[in-house]
Image 1 (tube, rainbow, N blue to C red):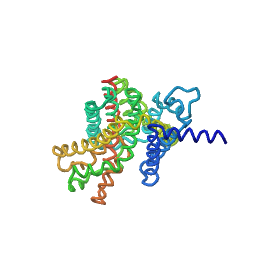
Image 2 (image 1 turned 90 degrees about the vertical axis):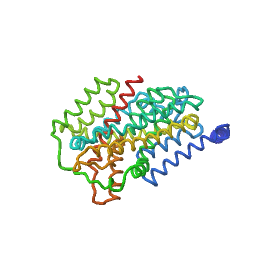
Image 3 (image 1 turned 135 degrees about the vertical axis):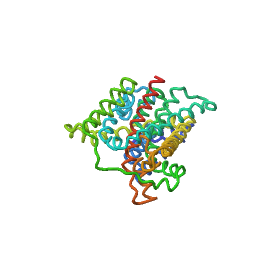
Image 4 (image 1 turned 45 degrees about the vertical axis):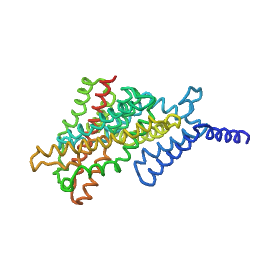
Length: 390
C-alpha cells in the first residue's frame, strides 16, 4: 500500500513540475486519436494503436517506454519494439511485403496514363522540403538539409517510407514525422475532397472514363513487372532496394500463382500484425518532452500542406493532360488526386466524390490505377532523396 501511495505522489509531482502540463496535453491527444478512430471510423487500424501508445508513453513513471529516452538495463516493451522494429527499419520493410501482396497492378497496365499521375502527385514532397528549409529563418534550432528531406517525405503519403528515411536522416524528429505521415494518411477523406472541388468544375467532376473491369494483363507481364522494377531500381538507386524490393517481392508472391498461402498470409496476418505493432510503437514516440515543441508544430503544418500540394499537383496535371488528349480519351481530373501513396483509401474517396456528383459515374478502376502508380512513385521519390542526401 505504501508503494502505491509513493507512486501516486511521484506521479503527481511529475505533473506539477515545470512542463508537467505537457504530459496531460499529450494524454488528451491520445484520447482524441482514439475517439477519431472509434467514433468517426478514421483509419482505426492506425489511429487507435497510435493513440493508445501516446497515452502509454506519457503516463508518469510509465515502464512501457523505459529506456527509450535514456539508457536502462530494464527497457519497457515499447522500447524493445522500437529498437527491434523501427530503429533498424524492420517493420517498414515487412509492411511493404504485405502492401505489395495487396496491390493489383492490373488497373495501371490497362490505364497506363495513370502512371504519370503517380509522378505528378509527388509534388508535395519537394514543396515540403522547401518549406522546411524556409522555416530555418525563424527556428532557434534550424533543420539540416537531411532533416528537411526527411520532413519532405511526409508528402509521399507513405508511412513506411517516412519511417525508413526519417530514421536515417532525422532520428530526433522521428516521432513527429511518423505521426504526421500516418495521421494525415488517415485524414485523407477530410483533406482531399475540398481541395479537389476547389480545383475542378462540376462538369470536370462528371467526366466518365471507360474502364474494362474484366480486362487482364497477360500473366507473364504481371510476373515480370515486379522483377524488372526491382532490378532497374536496384541499379539506378541501390539504397532503394530494401523498400522497392520488399514491395515487389510481395507483389510477385501474389501474381506468380503458386504461393497463394504465402500471399494470403502477407495480406492478412503479416500486415495486420505489423500494423498493430507499428501503430502502438509510433504512438510511444510521442513523448511530451520531444513532441510539444515549435519544430513539431512546423512539421505537422508542413505535413498537412504537403498533402494539399500532392492533391493539387495530381489534379492540375490531369487537367493539363486533358488539353492534349483526344475528346474520347479525356480523363476525370479528380483521379489525379489518387497519385498519392495512400492506397486504396484515396481511390475510394475520389469515387465517393464522383458518386456525389453523378451516382452512375464509376471511376474507381482508373482511380485505383493512379493510386497504385502513386505507391510506386512515392518509393521512387524516396529513392531519389536517399541517393541525393545519403
